[in-house]
Image 1 (cartoon, rainbow, N blue to C red):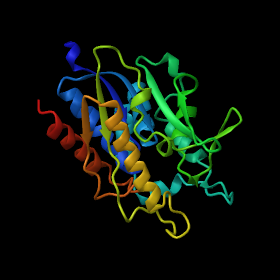
Image 2: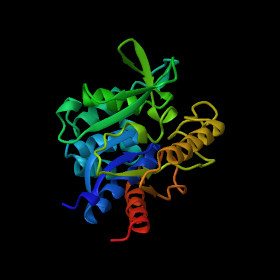
Image 3: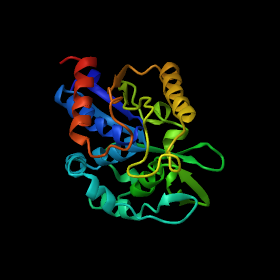
Length: 258
């Protein structure tokens, strides 16, 4: 394989919009690119874990089956003030798709990023249980209870490193490629929850995340930035998988024509 086609791929945060990463991966491979390592946070960590374990197709099929009734079945509501959902039902479903192997045993280097709720710093997973890394990285504040890990409380990696370009493993000849599925949307609100009580992010925080992504791109100068036009969808529209995957495919075709 031409080394110029080898890529270190980084997948952004984005909630449901991150489903577009599947289309990005599929189209990159269709065009002859070879993913040698992968990193992500939040939904990007989940999609990255599925790819690194060879379970991307199974993950795609599961996401395409999601609808409002099936999403409700994944909700284990709790009265805890730390989060509206325990997250146990969701993780059991994820475990049916992605094997709980150790990260260091994967065929390609994988990195997931979470955020320490107390220090507000990144927590980088390059070894240990894969599903622990995924659970930590997808823990949306106020929606999911934080993940307890080594005495710390971890939440969504998108708060500290929404596009973790600096943490992906990269060989000398690898192209650094960023897949960005995050965009501003004034109507983001959790699925079937009262928006005045359970917003995932305030609009100011959302703007800060977008600026963080822009600054990260400016700092690390990836060889390719693939931006999926996900603005029509909110971060909670997990029942729009088909449309979001198509947006990822279109973004690659627009960015790098075969």
